[in-house]
Length: 350
Image (tube, rainbow, N blue to C red):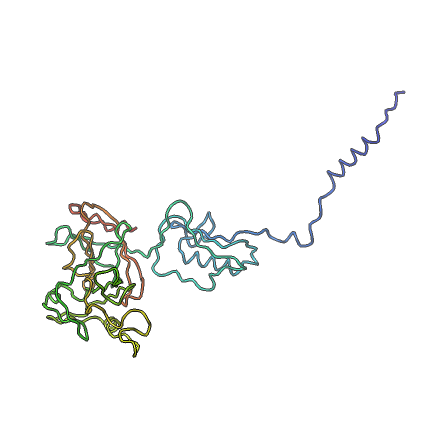
């Protein structure tokens, strides 16, 4: 009969404990915890190559700012029930986002639960928001070597800004070619030179403000000001200025006991220095320096005199409303209008 082998008690207990460790479940979760979703971010992704029909995730970005705004609003409205966490961030991928109007934000675009709604560029490239439209039909102006013109796009009625390669270009400008004496409606000129301009009503008188202590002359309505008034008409030597700009610059309400001081405490009661403009802008006859431009409002035509040596450039016209109330749109185009270059391109909108 074979000998019996005894198993140590310690070995048995060790085996039993190992079995318990392997078979016993872990701590039980509290009631209802299994139905609670993990927190998630509420980010929205936008790309110039996206589609507004997509959901705005990083893999499926939307295309327009308005669609991104609407998605952010939806996430803000359901922030708690959707178990979002952190700020709502709208990521704009590098590129140009074109819009035909302003991006309107209101109370719905405020961050929920103490968080923010953040709009920010994403990636290493630049992000540009533009209301650009293409300017087409560039051609050289007959009789003006180096000067180019193109029809202004529909809706462009007035503007003071044109950017060439990202730098603001100089609107055609120069000194007023005649002596001026102020009248109730404008000026009497010493000659009819302005009246013989192609479009006198396109021209704008500019009155730069200055500080007497530092400047030899002081025009306009004092320091920190730069009034601008357009010419309404010029007939013979009579120059009539646009209203209400003229009255707002020459008939301001003054304190009865402080002559020359306006009630709103901003500048004098009327244009200083006899109302003499510092210079005049936006006349075809002043378009004489490389890099200058002019908008013929009546003919709806943009003129540009290229910089010397330039053969190609991209320019943007920032338009304003007819009343000059503020930005309405931008106009964009690419040209190749060097002094000896071929015709400008009608494409290449930036």
